[in-house]
Image (cartoon, rainbow, N blue to C red; front, side, top):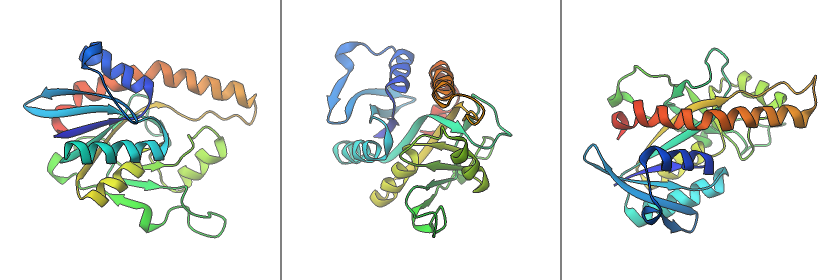
Length: 223
């Protein structure tokens, strides 16, 4: 069975709507809920983990152990960091890193032990790829955005790098499919709260569009 890991309630709600899931198909588990589907002759379990690394890792370890998953696909939204790309561009990263695991004042922002390389060779190369950076806080402050740009991060989120790490520990394949829902906004010349709310509203507007695009154009290829 293949797991489809989804973090936020808005991503999961868009998923429920996309697949027309009705109430009795939704099953609770300690981190949220899940539903089962057979698509393209593959048995899939779609599950919501909740946000941030602890929930992402806990939910995925539960699902890996319960359903004996052979692959995890992390599907969802991300913040854009490389500004040569645009909102709604979808990425399948070849590298997942955790960037909040060091004392950055005296160490590199990213250590080799927190990098997971993802082999995509069997899937071709006609899709956007790059490096996804994961931390327990979302990228909303301009200084964080600039720091990630300087470290050649392409996109950023709050779960995928940690999920890739735990999949590696379980010796199962992890594929990350993430679409840009928003870019950080420069709060230095405006009210920080107002700037943050603007970014959140953009995220909420684009989340269903990202999830639909992933399921329409990418799911079949990567299961």
